[in-house]
Length: 162
Ligand SMILES: CC(C)(COP(=O)(O)OP(=O)(O)OC[C@H]1O[C@@H](n2cnc3c(N)ncnc32)[C@H](O)[C@@H]1OP(=O)(O)O)[C@@H](O)C(=O)NCCC(=O)NCCS
Image (cartoon, rainbow, N blue to C red; front, side, top):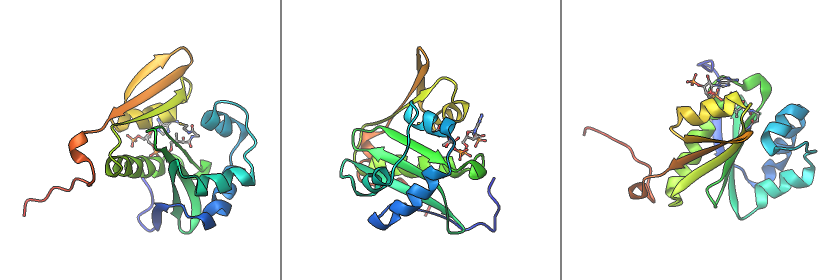
């Protein structure tokens, strides 16, 4: 669990956030980049700019005490991907991003979410399982699918007894 005194903020990335995203990706190891992109990849400034300006996706950034701790991207196709900074892993940041992506997908009226990850990616598989994704193995890949209730389209469910 994260420390109660930490100030955690999650928000949709704006054009000005490309530098934060570039900082995040510059902190990742080649193995992290491999897990994120499925191949060895050198993330460029241009990639960071595209992430904050592309019209076919929504990107969220998480800041912990003002420091970039993670990023999650929801494509309008329903495909999602995310990454958290190594020093912030297993503190619930990935879960915060996933929760936000699910909420936004429902607001956008998407019918299902999907992610692809490598069989060796225990962290992503655990995260998918935690949020109820159906997991299917296909050779060295795991495909996670979450069907979203169409009835929740356009709103975030909140229950109240009052
Ligand atoms: C996958 C990733 C985003 C998870 O982020 P995170 O901030 O560690 O996620 P959380 O702390 O919210 O953990 C989510 C759940 O997974 C579990 N988990 C996290 N890392 C784990 C690991 N290495 N092995 C087993 N379980 C793990 C946690 O215990 C937690 O479950 P719980 O709440 O029931 O205890 C992060 O490991 C990462 O960035 N990996 C590199 C990039 C990557 O693989 N991205 C996915 C590409 S689709």
